[in-house]
Image (tube, rainbow, N blue to C red; front, side, top):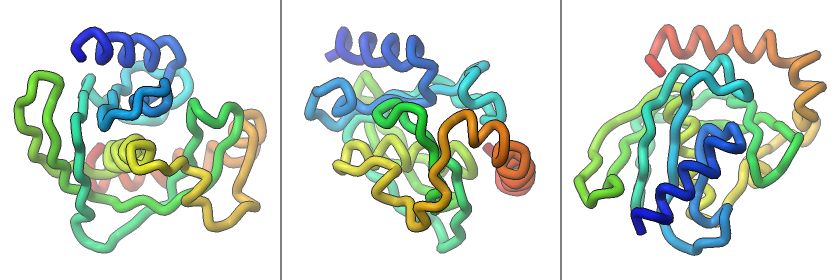
Length: 161
């Protein structure tokens, strides 16, 4: 299991992902890796230290949601707007079996929800309610990134990462 987690992290980093779930590399187990550090795909995301979630359960904290423009390593060159909870409570184990019991906020909460969705058999496409928000990376960079980054920077300033 430790060797698999090491490989999962290496694959995530090699692809410049903010996270990667085991099912994305054809392992049907409830494990995902999350990390954001100087990521060229997501320069607007605050750092997230390397986090391994084993058997995670996420519970929304409150009803507040935000629009998150997401992409996915499993769906290359496509992005779309999804609704994510601003805050979620996380219960899981880390890679050594230690309890994780915390609440995360903002873009970090969005990233956790995205990765745990994979473990539930969902991709971000399943959560896009308005297909007119689909865009390639080039279209996103050219037409949507500036406004999106301004919105999420306000969210991060208000609630944290």
